[in-house]
Image 1 (cartoon, helix red, strand yellow):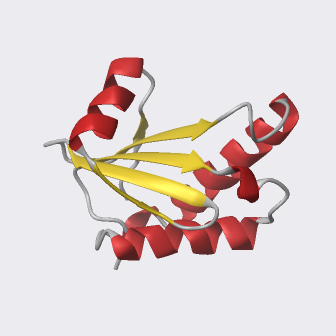
Image 2: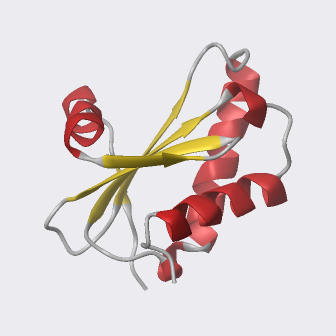
Length: 111
């Protein structure tokens, strides 16, 4: 079983934004970039426009858990940045999970 790390540094996020490719749906935006490692690194961004800190943290936990449970289906060696859109506010786990899987299939990194 593989475990992914977190993207934490601003320069890592900026690198994925500048050099990576992106797809979006109504709830999430996903940027991906090859990282040359044996594992994925995931970064999650939720803007203050989405809501207060409780709402933002709740969305972050939903996205992280959704990725964690479907991690074995994602291809290895990627930096993934997931951005929550304002429309994701108030959505349940199943809606966020299906949005994440949809983006993985668009990027052809989910099987």
